[in-house]
Length: 354
Image (cartoon, rainbow, N blue to C red; front, side, top):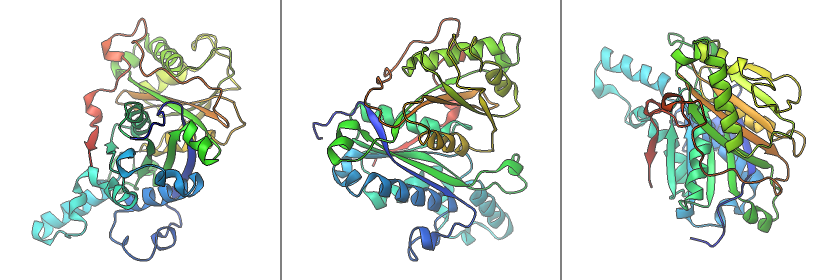
């Protein structure tokens, strides 16, 4: 390992890819990508763009064992699973394609990324409803802070849902990738920091959200998350909320005002964004917030009907004066264990150490 500190992580590269008009031959190359699932192609292309912005030595400056990846997804494998099911029921498992069959495992959707960029520190996949992409950033940063790696590729990728699937009308398809590294490393390479991001995830039980205390409980969790991320209440805060119409989404939306957030001054009314059927939109909003006026903090808030929720605090521009968020924090007063700061195991974090 190098002596370079892993604290003070900054974003040095952003890559976004949309499904409309996407051609893997143009984005990745004519050979070697044809049989990859679309979600893998999207994330490979997004990572390629992010690394191009971060500079050719973003990864080369450290060894393979000091590079890690974390990706979140909700629907990357759904269409492929449908195709496999139809094949098995129609003609038998013997007719499954040996090229695509391994991708029945959600872990493998990021495997090509690790192979191409020699990422041997860790390779993580997250599937928690809606918050998986933000969890990827959160856990990837924790891994770097623990010394597991010195560079991080993190983000989200989704493939459109089949028409028969619930939520198909709000399908997401595409990918967002971020490159994160210690600020001293970016400064040493002469690369500008695009900003800093920090994530806190938590769980708001749907039954609690639907109760008379739902909004109050959501506000307590949001205040705790912002405090843990180092946001100073005297700094104006822009808010983007990626929410659905579920009781959890409604409780979170009701908590987004200055009084509920502990007197924080909001920079205008919170922007409400209709949540899609996946984990991509919240990360896309983080990427967009990194391009906002320098030094203006921006909170991206999201939640799923199942109770999974997360807050990403984005400070765009030169992040040298921004205090690092604490590595951990206590559960806020008034929030019991069932509405605490950590995601339930139902989120199914998958990990493969390379």
